[in-house]
Length: 170
Length: 423
Image 1 (tube, rainbow over the protein chains, first blue to last red):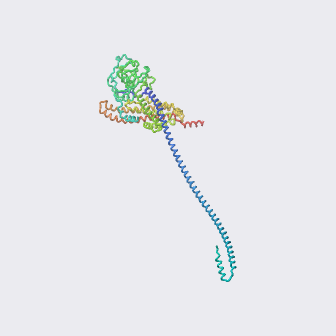
Image 2 (cartoon, each protein chain N blue to C red):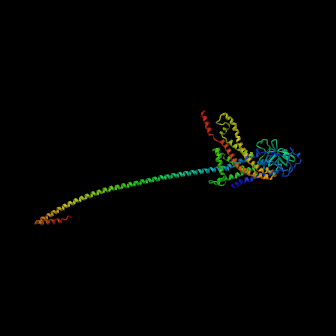
Image 3 (tube, each protein chain N blue to C red):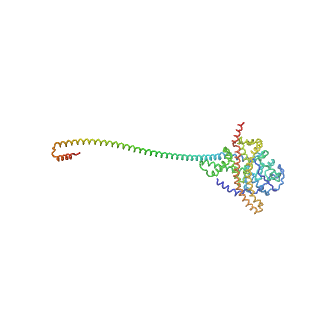
């Protein structure tokens, strides 16, 4: 007697359906609450953390770049200022020197003028003095001449020469 | 723990071929029915079958296969060694009966009218006989007019046995089997494993907050994120988080049940290859989908927008049937895939017995063994893949159905507004 005595198991038994439902509901409730939710939250938190960290790194990089460019701008400005200051200093120096030269020249000229004037004055004074002395001496000579007898012509001449020799112009 | 899983997975193909191939011997225990005068028992019908008490009962191999993929009230390890399981039986007449399956003495003892037929609890249909009989000789199943009828035979009389209520005859059935059967026990084991493993993983996120995943966390995190990013988010959309626990539970529950079903030493429980189990899961999906369906979902079923009115009348019944057909395909797909895999392995292993002509031909048995085990090995590897695939498909399709129920049809809204304006 060969026949299939065991039925193909395709009858949905109430007990298995019942227990599967209960067990699955328990799995759904407990795993959902104590496993899947915490895992999901942790993963989400981690993803957020990573995103935040990335964003912050990007921001920091941006800030660094900004800082660097700012520094460069500052440096360039400083250099510019230095150049300006140097230029100004040079100009100031040049102008000071020029002014000084001018003043020196002016003073020199003034001094020269004054010196010339002095010389002129002295010269005039000397000439006056000389004139006076020459006049004096002439008078003296004339006196002496008058006092001596004009004997010989030769003697006379000698006398005059000696007189002239005696005149010492200082 | 991950080492344990790895070891188990590696062992599966090697131990599978040993999956329960003891010949069933209904008469190992030479128990005699106590009632010698059959005429005193009600509903007694003379037994004219060929089997006799104490005789070896050779079962067709196909029956062996069917028995192995069916649920049972005890876990058959090998030979006559069984792990007893608690039986919770409810009959409309007897009320609640709570016994261990070992109390049935391998199908020889009658307890409150219940007997064990090939590891499956059945009830003697005739209530008088159920009360009077205390022992039976053996059970037998015959196909009569295309119906599988099981009989308990006691002293040359046979008594028709009634199967427990199924969902198909729940109204007319007289008794219910709420036992922690082989499948349910394995399912509970899978659930406990699921709780321990995923609980450990979840705990890892708490204790190692802000740190990189480690150990089991690293194994389950990619699976979790894959299910979330490739299944949940694309199919459900921004509202996915509400349905995440459900779909994840489905995936992991089906996966663990599939994998546990591949381990032969636990009785080779065909957990997800049972139509009631897959039906329960499909009903869950059905309820979740239809209870969260928004007005667009129902509109697309009963009054399809964007089509001519006469087409809408045609589409409505089709779409309405679709509500039930979708979860039905879920239950059939999982059940058929897992059962087919189990049958394939059993048949390949059965080559040993078929080619060996039940021990008559040693050469045939060896040849069958070599070929059968080689193929069974590959089928097992394939089943390992199928376990993951079917769990994935069940979760994917469930979330697609949920997605169709909760999706916002902005373009339709827009269209409706335009129509409203034009009027």
